[in-house]
Image 1 (cartoon, rainbow, N blue to C red):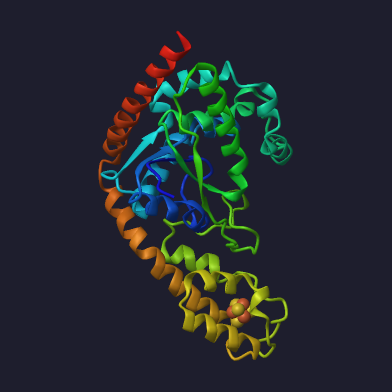
Image 2: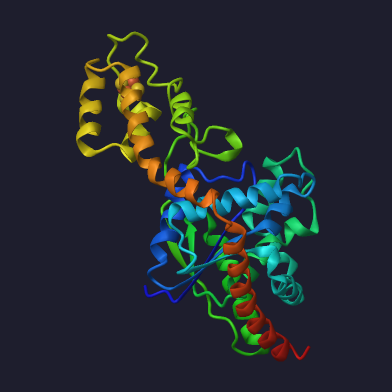
Amino acid sequence: MNPKVIMSGIRPTGTGAAHLGHWEGALKSWVKLQDMGECYYSIVDWHALTTEYQDVKNIQGNIRQVLLDLLAVGIDPEKSVVYLQSAVKEIAELFLLLGMMTPLGWLERVPTFKEQQAQLGDRDINTFGFLGYPLLQTVDIVVMKADTVPVGEDQVFHLELAREIVRRFNGLYGDCFPEPQPFLTPIPKLPGVDGRKMSKSYGNAIYLGDTAEAVDKKIRPMITDVRRKRRSDPGVPGDCPVFALHQAYSGAEEIAMVDGECRKAGIGCIDCKKILIRNINGFLEPFRQRRRRYEAMAVADILASGNRRAAERAARTVAEVRALMNI
Ligand code: SF4
């Protein structure tokens, strides 16, 4: 594949900050894609409103946290356009225009629509905004005329919807948008510190901005293989979330050592965790250093410059759409 224009977004929700699961499942690809084309990376604050419109007090703080994380992982504002969705008003205009020709049934059959309504039962998301969020995602992509979108396999359906909307628009009014293609990123099987999938909403995540002490505090009490009740009981590393994290963040020799020693009770869980803590902290240290550097800088200026570049490109697209729609 030879991508030319790449677009992706991150929501400033929860604590705002990104964790190891975000790094493995998305941000690692974002960094790599910077050398493969023109990248547009958006902090999608309007998307945050689709599920969190009732509680908006943390959005500004979260935007700053996400921005610091993006810069700390190596998104280079010289190479990529990093911008805030709500600063590009053309996105709202295009959302309205494409909304005119998007069949309701296409949005209603998006699988996450019913799933999320069931999962987020504590919130009233029976709203026009929530139904329309896959269209808003489409607009994020097409307003930049992106041809490549890094997605996890679980989001391929959304991208298919975007492609259908593009085909419908191009068919009705004339060629305007490229059909965006997925750049598939593997979904990591990274457990959180409670053994479930690492997720902001489970409160089990190790954040990229966590201090060494915070990592220590989170990993020490982790549950291990239930067979290891006593130090002398052998275990099965495959049944232990600590080992799953070793596989992601320890070297091959250490993984082999832990694997062998755990099985014959040659290593205790506390020592095993100490090795993991050291390795995760070693992995996070460069992020932390870059994050500290950016915390001391006027990052709002970086975002303002990205906002301008994104708005310019979006304005050109919307002018073309207006002409084609005779508006
Ligand atoms: S020794 Fe390590 S891999 Fe084995 S059960 Fe304990 S923490 Fe898990």
